[in-house]
Image (cartoon, rainbow, N blue to C red; front, side, top):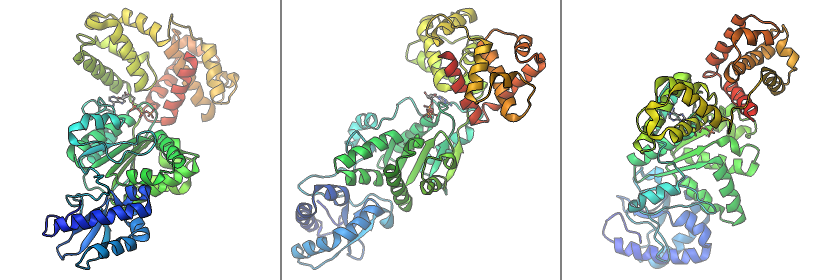
Length: 485
Ligand SMILES: Nc1ncnc2c1ncn2[C@@H]1O[C@H](COP(=O)(O)OP(=O)(O)OP(=O)(O)O)[C@@H](O)[C@H]1O
Protein backbone atom coordinates (compact mmCIF):
# COMPACT_ATOMS: atom_id res chain seq x y z
CA UNK A 1 0.00 0.00 0.00
CA UNK A 2 2.81 2.40 0.60
CA UNK A 3 5.27 3.86 -1.77
CA UNK A 4 8.27 6.07 -1.56
CA UNK A 5 6.60 9.28 -2.59
CA UNK A 6 6.82 8.29 -6.21
CA UNK A 7 10.49 7.29 -6.20
CA UNK A 8 11.80 4.09 -7.69
CA UNK A 9 11.26 1.10 -5.50
CA UNK A 10 7.74 2.24 -4.57
CA UNK A 11 6.16 -1.06 -5.56
CA UNK A 12 8.73 -2.84 -3.44
CA UNK A 13 7.96 -0.65 -0.47
CA UNK A 14 4.29 -1.36 -0.98
CA UNK A 15 4.86 -5.05 -0.84
CA UNK A 16 7.13 -4.93 2.19
CA UNK A 17 4.89 -2.60 4.13
CA UNK A 18 1.83 -4.61 3.26
CA UNK A 19 3.33 -7.81 4.55
CA UNK A 20 4.86 -6.19 7.61
CA UNK A 21 1.50 -4.58 8.41
CA UNK A 22 -0.42 -7.83 8.27
CA UNK A 23 1.98 -9.37 10.76
CA UNK A 24 2.11 -6.34 12.98
CA UNK A 25 -1.66 -6.14 13.10
CA UNK A 26 -1.87 -9.77 14.17
CA UNK A 27 0.69 -9.11 16.92
CA UNK A 28 -0.50 -5.84 18.39
CA UNK A 29 -4.22 -6.26 17.78
CA UNK A 30 -6.81 -4.41 15.69
CA UNK A 31 -7.46 -1.58 18.15
CA UNK A 32 -3.92 -0.19 18.48
CA UNK A 33 -3.17 -0.97 14.85
CA UNK A 34 -6.20 0.93 13.58
CA UNK A 35 -5.53 3.82 15.91
CA UNK A 36 -1.83 4.38 15.44
CA UNK A 37 -0.45 2.46 12.50
CA UNK A 38 -3.24 2.43 9.90
CA UNK A 39 -3.54 6.21 9.62
CA UNK A 40 0.24 6.48 9.12
CA UNK A 41 2.19 6.31 5.87
CA UNK A 42 5.69 5.29 4.84
CA UNK A 43 7.70 7.90 2.99
CA UNK A 44 11.20 8.08 1.67
CA UNK A 45 12.99 11.36 2.19
CA UNK A 46 15.48 12.92 -0.22
CA UNK A 47 18.36 11.12 1.50
CA UNK A 48 16.66 7.76 0.98
CA UNK A 49 15.69 7.39 4.62
CA UNK A 50 12.40 5.55 5.22
CA UNK A 51 10.05 7.42 7.52
CA UNK A 52 6.80 6.29 9.01
CA UNK A 53 4.70 9.48 9.18
CA UNK A 54 2.03 9.42 11.88
CA UNK A 55 -0.88 11.86 11.93
CA UNK A 56 -0.11 13.19 15.41
CA UNK A 57 2.75 13.51 17.87
CA UNK A 58 0.77 11.32 20.23
CA UNK A 59 0.63 8.52 17.64
CA UNK A 60 4.36 9.00 16.96
CA UNK A 61 5.20 8.57 20.63
CA UNK A 62 2.96 5.55 20.89
CA UNK A 63 4.55 3.89 17.85
CA UNK A 64 8.05 4.74 19.07
CA UNK A 65 7.39 3.21 22.44
CA UNK A 66 5.27 0.22 21.49
CA UNK A 67 5.78 -0.82 17.90
CA UNK A 68 8.85 0.64 16.22
CA UNK A 69 11.33 -1.97 17.33
CA UNK A 70 9.07 -4.79 16.13
CA UNK A 71 8.28 -2.95 12.89
CA UNK A 72 11.96 -2.71 12.14
CA UNK A 73 12.51 -6.40 12.87
CA UNK A 74 9.68 -7.27 10.50
CA UNK A 75 10.93 -4.81 7.92
CA UNK A 76 14.48 -6.10 8.01
CA UNK A 77 13.26 -9.64 7.54
CA UNK A 78 11.38 -8.63 4.39
CA UNK A 79 13.63 -6.00 2.86
CA UNK A 80 16.85 -7.17 1.26
CA UNK A 81 18.33 -3.68 1.47
CA UNK A 82 18.66 -3.54 5.27
CA UNK A 83 16.90 -0.22 5.54
CA UNK A 84 15.54 0.96 8.85
CA UNK A 85 12.35 2.85 9.57
CA UNK A 86 12.24 6.06 11.52
CA UNK A 87 9.07 7.57 12.86
CA UNK A 88 7.96 11.22 12.70
CA UNK A 89 4.66 13.00 13.03
CA UNK A 90 3.11 14.96 10.20
CA UNK A 91 3.92 18.31 11.77
CA UNK A 92 7.61 17.44 11.72
CA UNK A 93 7.73 16.57 8.05
CA UNK A 94 5.65 19.51 6.80
CA UNK A 95 1.95 20.10 6.64
CA UNK A 96 1.40 18.22 3.38
CA UNK A 97 -0.61 15.03 3.78
CA UNK A 98 1.64 12.00 4.16
CA UNK A 99 2.71 10.53 0.85
CA UNK A 100 0.20 9.32 -1.63
CA UNK A 101 -0.25 6.02 0.02
CA UNK A 102 -1.66 5.28 3.39
CA UNK A 103 -0.72 2.24 5.33
CA UNK A 104 -3.22 -0.43 6.08
CA UNK A 105 -3.19 -4.11 6.61
CA UNK A 106 -5.52 -6.64 5.08
CA UNK A 107 -6.42 -4.36 2.20
CA UNK A 108 -8.24 -2.07 4.57
CA UNK A 109 -7.17 1.23 3.07
CA UNK A 110 -7.71 4.29 5.20
CA UNK A 111 -9.10 7.05 3.06
CA UNK A 112 -7.06 10.24 2.98
CA UNK A 113 -9.63 12.16 0.94
CA UNK A 114 -11.29 15.37 2.17
CA UNK A 115 -13.69 14.97 5.00
CA UNK A 116 -15.58 16.78 7.63
CA UNK A 117 -15.47 14.48 10.55
CA UNK A 118 -17.50 14.08 13.66
CA UNK A 119 -17.82 11.61 16.43
CA UNK A 120 -20.80 9.42 15.94
CA UNK A 121 -22.29 7.53 18.82
CA UNK A 122 -20.04 4.75 19.91
CA UNK A 123 -16.66 4.71 18.31
CA UNK A 124 -15.23 7.78 16.72
CA UNK A 125 -15.49 8.04 12.98
CA UNK A 126 -11.94 8.49 11.77
CA UNK A 127 -13.04 8.93 8.17
CA UNK A 128 -16.36 9.71 6.62
CA UNK A 129 -16.45 8.92 2.98
CA UNK A 130 -14.91 10.45 -0.06
CA UNK A 131 -15.43 13.96 -1.44
CA UNK A 132 -18.28 12.92 -3.67
CA UNK A 133 -20.21 12.05 -0.56
CA UNK A 134 -19.58 15.41 1.06
CA UNK A 135 -23.22 16.03 1.91
CA UNK A 136 -23.40 12.85 3.94
CA UNK A 137 -20.18 13.73 5.68
CA UNK A 138 -21.55 17.13 6.58
CA UNK A 139 -24.75 15.72 8.04
CA UNK A 140 -22.77 13.16 9.96
CA UNK A 141 -20.81 15.98 11.51
CA UNK A 142 -23.87 17.39 13.27
CA UNK A 143 -23.30 20.81 11.78
CA UNK A 144 -26.31 22.81 10.72
CA UNK A 145 -26.25 23.96 7.14
CA UNK A 146 -27.86 27.30 7.83
CA UNK A 147 -25.29 28.34 10.46
CA UNK A 148 -22.73 30.06 8.25
CA UNK A 149 -20.98 33.43 8.22
CA UNK A 150 -23.48 34.60 5.60
CA UNK A 151 -26.42 34.10 7.95
CA UNK A 152 -24.67 35.61 10.99
CA UNK A 153 -25.66 39.21 11.64
CA UNK A 154 -22.91 41.47 12.92
CA UNK A 155 -23.73 43.95 15.64
CA UNK A 156 -22.61 45.49 18.86
CA UNK A 157 -21.42 42.76 21.17
CA UNK A 158 -20.41 40.21 18.54
CA UNK A 159 -18.26 42.17 16.05
CA UNK A 160 -14.96 41.18 17.67
CA UNK A 161 -16.01 37.55 17.99
CA UNK A 162 -17.07 37.49 14.35
CA UNK A 163 -13.77 38.97 13.19
CA UNK A 164 -11.80 36.41 15.19
CA UNK A 165 -14.02 33.57 13.96
CA UNK A 166 -13.40 34.57 10.36
CA UNK A 167 -9.69 34.73 11.00
CA UNK A 168 -9.64 31.27 12.57
CA UNK A 169 -11.60 29.88 9.60
CA UNK A 170 -8.92 31.01 7.14
CA UNK A 171 -6.32 28.91 8.96
CA UNK A 172 -4.32 32.11 9.24
CA UNK A 173 -1.10 31.76 11.14
CA UNK A 174 -2.04 33.37 14.39
CA UNK A 175 -0.66 33.38 17.87
CA UNK A 176 -3.83 32.33 19.61
CA UNK A 177 -4.57 28.72 20.24
CA UNK A 178 -7.05 27.76 21.57
CA UNK A 179 -9.64 30.40 20.74
CA UNK A 180 -12.37 30.40 23.35
CA UNK A 181 -15.77 32.00 22.63
CA UNK A 182 -17.83 32.71 25.72
CA UNK A 183 -21.09 34.40 26.48
CA UNK A 184 -24.68 33.93 27.62
CA UNK A 185 -26.71 31.15 26.06
CA UNK A 186 -28.50 31.71 22.78
CA UNK A 187 -26.44 34.57 21.36
CA UNK A 188 -24.58 32.86 18.57
CA UNK A 189 -21.63 30.81 19.92
CA UNK A 190 -22.78 27.60 18.23
CA UNK A 191 -23.54 29.59 15.12
CA UNK A 192 -19.98 30.92 15.02
CA UNK A 193 -18.41 27.49 15.63
CA UNK A 194 -20.52 26.01 12.81
CA UNK A 195 -19.59 28.88 10.52
CA UNK A 196 -15.88 28.39 11.25
CA UNK A 197 -16.14 24.66 10.53
CA UNK A 198 -17.91 25.18 7.20
CA UNK A 199 -15.54 27.88 6.03
CA UNK A 200 -12.37 26.12 7.22
CA UNK A 201 -13.45 22.96 5.42
CA UNK A 202 -14.31 24.91 2.28
CA UNK A 203 -10.88 26.52 2.26
CA UNK A 204 -8.97 23.34 3.03
CA UNK A 205 -11.02 20.41 1.76
CA UNK A 206 -8.22 17.97 2.57
CA UNK A 207 -8.11 18.94 6.23
CA UNK A 208 -9.90 17.04 8.96
CA UNK A 209 -12.24 19.42 10.73
CA UNK A 210 -13.96 17.92 13.76
CA UNK A 211 -16.91 19.64 15.42
CA UNK A 212 -18.66 18.21 18.43
CA UNK A 213 -20.47 19.31 21.53
CA UNK A 214 -18.92 18.64 24.91
CA UNK A 215 -21.94 16.46 25.68
CA UNK A 216 -21.14 14.34 22.65
CA UNK A 217 -17.48 14.25 23.65
CA UNK A 218 -18.50 13.00 27.06
CA UNK A 219 -20.98 10.37 25.92
CA UNK A 220 -18.69 9.09 23.18
CA UNK A 221 -15.78 8.85 25.57
CA UNK A 222 -17.85 6.96 28.13
CA UNK A 223 -19.11 4.58 25.47
CA UNK A 224 -15.57 4.11 24.13
CA UNK A 225 -14.43 3.16 27.63
CA UNK A 226 -17.23 0.60 27.90
CA UNK A 227 -16.39 -0.80 24.46
CA UNK A 228 -12.66 -0.72 25.18
CA UNK A 229 -12.17 1.40 22.08
CA UNK A 230 -10.67 4.48 23.69
CA UNK A 231 -7.60 4.24 21.44
CA UNK A 232 -9.76 4.78 18.35
CA UNK A 233 -11.57 7.59 20.11
CA UNK A 234 -8.36 9.32 21.09
CA UNK A 235 -6.91 8.94 17.67
CA UNK A 236 -9.90 10.27 15.82
CA UNK A 237 -9.62 13.44 17.89
CA UNK A 238 -5.87 13.70 17.76
CA UNK A 239 -5.76 13.34 14.01
CA UNK A 240 -7.94 16.44 13.63
CA UNK A 241 -6.44 19.48 11.94
CA UNK A 242 -9.07 21.62 13.59
CA UNK A 243 -11.13 20.64 16.61
CA UNK A 244 -14.19 22.67 17.60
CA UNK A 245 -15.73 21.78 20.95
CA UNK A 246 -19.04 23.46 21.77
CA UNK A 247 -20.46 24.11 25.27
CA UNK A 248 -17.33 22.95 27.07
CA UNK A 249 -18.87 23.84 30.45
CA UNK A 250 -20.58 20.43 30.27
CA UNK A 251 -17.34 18.58 30.97
CA UNK A 252 -17.27 20.18 34.40
CA UNK A 253 -17.10 17.74 37.28
CA UNK A 254 -16.28 14.65 35.19
CA UNK A 255 -12.71 13.83 36.10
CA UNK A 256 -11.80 11.19 33.50
CA UNK A 257 -13.36 13.18 30.67
CA UNK A 258 -11.49 16.29 31.74
CA UNK A 259 -8.26 14.34 31.85
CA UNK A 260 -8.93 13.05 28.34
CA UNK A 261 -9.76 16.52 27.10
CA UNK A 262 -6.61 17.91 28.64
CA UNK A 263 -4.38 15.35 26.97
CA UNK A 264 -6.18 15.84 23.63
CA UNK A 265 -5.71 19.54 23.97
CA UNK A 266 -2.03 19.36 24.73
CA UNK A 267 -1.39 16.82 21.95
CA UNK A 268 -3.16 18.97 19.36
CA UNK A 269 -1.47 22.16 20.47
CA UNK A 270 1.89 20.48 20.40
CA UNK A 271 1.13 19.42 16.82
CA UNK A 272 0.17 22.94 15.86
CA UNK A 273 -3.49 22.02 15.25
CA UNK A 274 -6.29 24.58 15.63
CA UNK A 275 -8.63 24.39 18.58
CA UNK A 276 -11.81 26.33 19.15
CA UNK A 277 -13.99 26.15 22.26
CA UNK A 278 -17.23 27.71 23.39
CA UNK A 279 -18.77 27.95 26.83
CA UNK A 280 -21.33 30.00 28.71
CA UNK A 281 -18.55 31.58 30.79
CA UNK A 282 -14.93 32.64 30.44
CA UNK A 283 -12.48 29.77 31.08
CA UNK A 284 -11.36 30.97 34.49
CA UNK A 285 -15.00 31.17 35.64
CA UNK A 286 -15.55 27.47 34.89
CA UNK A 287 -15.06 26.57 38.52
CA UNK A 288 -16.21 22.96 38.09
CA UNK A 289 -13.38 22.42 35.61
CA UNK A 290 -10.10 21.12 36.97
CA UNK A 291 -7.61 24.05 37.35
CA UNK A 292 -4.97 22.66 34.99
CA UNK A 293 -7.49 22.19 32.19
CA UNK A 294 -8.97 25.58 32.96
CA UNK A 295 -5.64 27.29 32.58
CA UNK A 296 -5.04 25.50 29.25
CA UNK A 297 -8.44 26.65 28.05
CA UNK A 298 -7.52 30.20 28.96
CA UNK A 299 -4.07 30.05 27.41
CA UNK A 300 -5.06 31.34 23.97
CA UNK A 301 -7.57 34.04 23.18
CA UNK A 302 -10.81 34.45 25.10
CA UNK A 303 -13.38 36.15 22.97
CA UNK A 304 -16.73 37.32 24.37
CA UNK A 305 -19.98 36.92 22.42
CA UNK A 306 -22.22 39.34 24.25
CA UNK A 307 -25.98 39.50 24.51
CA UNK A 308 -27.31 41.39 21.50
CA UNK A 309 -28.85 44.84 21.82
CA UNK A 310 -32.27 45.75 20.42
CA UNK A 311 -30.88 46.86 17.08
CA UNK A 312 -29.07 43.58 16.53
CA UNK A 313 -32.14 41.61 17.53
CA UNK A 314 -34.25 43.50 15.01
CA UNK A 315 -31.65 42.81 12.32
CA UNK A 316 -31.58 39.10 13.23
CA UNK A 317 -35.39 38.92 13.11
CA UNK A 318 -35.43 40.65 9.72
CA UNK A 319 -32.72 38.33 8.45
CA UNK A 320 -34.60 35.25 9.61
CA UNK A 321 -37.79 36.41 7.91
CA UNK A 322 -35.82 37.01 4.72
CA UNK A 323 -34.49 33.45 4.93
CA UNK A 324 -38.03 32.13 5.44
CA UNK A 325 -39.15 34.21 2.50
CA UNK A 326 -36.46 32.66 0.32
CA UNK A 327 -37.79 29.26 1.38
CA UNK A 328 -41.30 30.32 0.38
CA UNK A 329 -42.69 30.19 3.95
CA UNK A 330 -43.64 33.89 3.90
CA UNK A 331 -44.09 36.54 1.25
CA UNK A 332 -42.95 40.13 1.65
CA UNK A 333 -41.45 41.87 4.68
CA UNK A 334 -42.79 42.64 8.12
CA UNK A 335 -43.56 46.29 8.92
CA UNK A 336 -40.79 47.94 11.04
CA UNK A 337 -43.16 48.44 14.00
CA UNK A 338 -44.14 44.77 13.86
CA UNK A 339 -40.49 43.75 13.95
CA UNK A 340 -39.78 46.13 16.82
CA UNK A 341 -42.78 44.78 18.74
CA UNK A 342 -41.65 41.23 18.15
CA UNK A 343 -38.26 42.00 19.64
CA UNK A 344 -39.68 43.95 22.60
CA UNK A 345 -42.07 41.15 23.50
CA UNK A 346 -39.26 38.59 23.41
CA UNK A 347 -36.75 39.62 26.05
CA UNK A 348 -34.92 36.27 26.04
CA UNK A 349 -32.03 35.30 23.79
CA UNK A 350 -31.85 35.10 20.00
CA UNK A 351 -33.17 31.56 20.34
CA UNK A 352 -36.45 32.76 21.85
CA UNK A 353 -36.54 35.51 19.26
CA UNK A 354 -36.25 32.97 16.47
CA UNK A 355 -39.18 31.09 17.98
CA UNK A 356 -41.25 34.26 17.95
CA UNK A 357 -40.23 34.99 14.35
CA UNK A 358 -41.27 31.46 13.34
CA UNK A 359 -44.62 31.94 15.07
CA UNK A 360 -45.24 35.15 13.20
CA UNK A 361 -44.14 33.61 9.91
CA UNK A 362 -46.31 30.55 10.31
CA UNK A 363 -49.38 32.64 11.12
CA UNK A 364 -48.81 35.37 8.56
CA UNK A 365 -47.59 33.33 5.57
CA UNK A 366 -48.26 35.21 2.36
CA UNK A 367 -49.82 38.11 4.32
CA UNK A 368 -46.64 39.11 6.17
CA UNK A 369 -46.46 42.63 4.77
CA UNK A 370 -50.11 43.25 5.67
CA UNK A 371 -49.81 42.21 9.34
CA UNK A 372 -50.63 45.16 11.61
CA UNK A 373 -49.17 45.89 15.02
CA UNK A 374 -52.41 44.89 16.78
CA UNK A 375 -52.60 41.67 14.86
CA UNK A 376 -48.97 40.82 15.63
CA UNK A 377 -49.52 41.68 19.25
CA UNK A 378 -52.54 39.37 19.59
CA UNK A 379 -50.78 36.63 17.75
CA UNK A 380 -47.56 36.75 19.70
CA UNK A 381 -49.26 37.34 23.03
CA UNK A 382 -51.12 34.07 22.66
CA UNK A 383 -48.26 32.12 21.12
CA UNK A 384 -45.49 33.16 23.48
CA UNK A 385 -47.53 32.08 26.43
CA UNK A 386 -48.96 28.98 24.81
CA UNK A 387 -52.58 30.15 24.84
CA UNK A 388 -54.54 33.16 25.94
CA UNK A 389 -52.23 35.76 27.42
CA UNK A 390 -51.53 35.00 31.07
CA UNK A 391 -51.48 38.07 33.25
CA UNK A 392 -48.29 38.52 35.19
CA UNK A 393 -48.66 40.78 38.20
CA UNK A 394 -46.24 43.22 39.82
CA UNK A 395 -46.53 41.23 43.04
CA UNK A 396 -45.60 38.02 41.27
CA UNK A 397 -42.58 39.68 39.66
CA UNK A 398 -41.38 41.06 42.99
CA UNK A 399 -41.71 37.67 44.69
CA UNK A 400 -39.93 35.85 41.86
CA UNK A 401 -37.08 38.36 41.72
CA UNK A 402 -36.67 38.38 45.51
CA UNK A 403 -36.48 34.59 45.60
CA UNK A 404 -34.02 34.49 42.69
CA UNK A 405 -31.63 36.83 44.53
CA UNK A 406 -32.28 35.34 47.99
CA UNK A 407 -33.87 38.56 49.21
CA UNK A 408 -37.18 39.35 50.84
CA UNK A 409 -39.91 41.03 48.82
CA UNK A 410 -39.79 43.81 51.41
CA UNK A 411 -36.14 44.50 50.49
CA UNK A 412 -37.23 45.47 46.99
CA UNK A 413 -39.72 47.95 48.38
CA UNK A 414 -37.34 49.29 51.01
CA UNK A 415 -35.04 52.32 50.92
CA UNK A 416 -31.90 50.16 50.87
CA UNK A 417 -29.52 51.30 48.16
CA UNK A 418 -26.72 48.77 48.35
CA UNK A 419 -25.95 47.21 44.97
CA UNK A 420 -27.09 43.76 46.13
CA UNK A 421 -30.59 45.13 46.59
CA UNK A 422 -30.70 48.04 44.16
CA UNK A 423 -29.81 45.96 41.09
CA UNK A 424 -32.46 43.26 41.70
CA UNK A 425 -34.95 46.07 42.30
CA UNK A 426 -34.09 47.58 38.91
CA UNK A 427 -34.41 44.17 37.28
CA UNK A 428 -37.83 43.78 38.88
CA UNK A 429 -38.86 47.20 37.56
CA UNK A 430 -37.64 46.27 34.10
CA UNK A 431 -39.62 43.03 34.19
CA UNK A 432 -42.73 44.93 35.32
CA UNK A 433 -42.41 47.19 32.32
CA UNK A 434 -41.95 44.18 30.03
CA UNK A 435 -44.69 41.96 31.37
CA UNK A 436 -47.40 44.22 32.72
CA UNK A 437 -49.33 47.13 31.27
CA UNK A 438 -48.55 49.32 34.32
CA UNK A 439 -47.27 52.84 33.73
CA UNK A 440 -43.99 54.13 35.22
CA UNK A 441 -45.79 56.07 38.01
CA UNK A 442 -47.91 53.02 38.79
CA UNK A 443 -44.86 50.77 39.02
CA UNK A 444 -43.14 53.39 41.20
CA UNK A 445 -46.06 53.36 43.64
CA UNK A 446 -45.83 49.59 43.94
CA UNK A 447 -42.14 49.78 44.74
CA UNK A 448 -42.52 51.61 48.04
CA UNK A 449 -43.94 54.83 46.58
CA UNK A 450 -40.99 55.71 44.33
CA UNK A 451 -41.06 58.46 41.77
CA UNK A 452 -41.67 57.50 38.12
CA UNK A 453 -38.22 58.89 37.13
CA UNK A 454 -36.59 56.34 39.45
CA UNK A 455 -38.43 53.56 37.64
CA UNK A 456 -37.53 54.99 34.26
CA UNK A 457 -33.87 55.17 35.31
CA UNK A 458 -33.98 51.58 36.60
CA UNK A 459 -35.53 50.21 33.41
CA UNK A 460 -33.04 52.08 31.21
CA UNK A 461 -30.15 50.90 33.37
CA UNK A 462 -31.08 47.25 32.86
CA UNK A 463 -31.61 47.76 29.12
CA UNK A 464 -28.18 49.32 28.96
CA UNK A 465 -26.47 46.65 31.08
CA UNK A 466 -27.97 43.55 29.47
CA UNK A 467 -25.86 43.63 26.32
CA UNK A 468 -22.72 44.31 28.36
CA UNK A 469 -23.15 42.19 31.42
CA UNK A 470 -23.56 38.45 30.90
CA UNK A 471 -24.69 37.87 34.42
CA UNK A 472 -27.53 40.37 34.21
CA UNK A 473 -28.59 39.03 30.82
CA UNK A 474 -28.67 35.53 32.31
CA UNK A 475 -30.64 36.68 35.35
CA UNK A 476 -33.24 38.43 33.22
CA UNK A 477 -33.58 35.41 30.98
CA UNK A 478 -33.95 33.02 33.88
CA UNK A 479 -36.53 35.26 35.55
CA UNK A 480 -38.46 35.67 32.30
CA UNK A 481 -38.64 31.90 31.95
CA UNK A 482 -39.81 31.50 35.54
CA UNK A 483 -42.48 34.15 35.15
CA UNK A 484 -43.81 32.59 31.97
CA UNK A 485 -44.04 29.30 33.78
N1 LIG B 1 -25.76 37.42 15.37
C1 LIG B 1 -26.59 36.46 14.95
N2 LIG B 1 -27.00 36.42 13.67
C2 LIG B 1 -27.86 35.48 13.23
N3 LIG B 1 -28.39 34.53 14.00
C3 LIG B 1 -28.02 34.51 15.29
C4 LIG B 1 -27.10 35.46 15.85
N4 LIG B 1 -26.94 35.20 17.16
C5 LIG B 1 -27.68 34.12 17.41
N5 LIG B 1 -28.35 33.71 16.31
C6 LIG B 1 -29.26 32.58 16.19
O1 LIG B 1 -29.85 32.36 17.46
C7 LIG B 1 -29.94 30.95 17.74
C8 LIG B 1 -29.20 30.64 19.01
O2 LIG B 1 -27.81 30.85 18.78
P1 LIG B 1 -26.70 29.75 19.17
O3 LIG B 1 -27.30 28.37 19.20
O4 LIG B 1 -25.53 29.95 18.31
O5 LIG B 1 -26.42 30.22 20.66
P2 LIG B 1 -25.34 29.73 21.73
O6 LIG B 1 -24.71 30.97 22.21
O7 LIG B 1 -24.48 28.68 21.15
O8 LIG B 1 -26.24 29.12 22.86
P3 LIG B 1 -25.90 27.89 23.90
O9 LIG B 1 -24.94 28.44 24.88
O10 LIG B 1 -27.25 27.55 24.46
O11 LIG B 1 -25.34 26.77 23.08
C9 LIG B 1 -29.36 30.23 16.55
O12 LIG B 1 -30.41 29.77 15.73
C10 LIG B 1 -28.54 31.29 15.84
O13 LIG B 1 -28.53 31.07 14.45
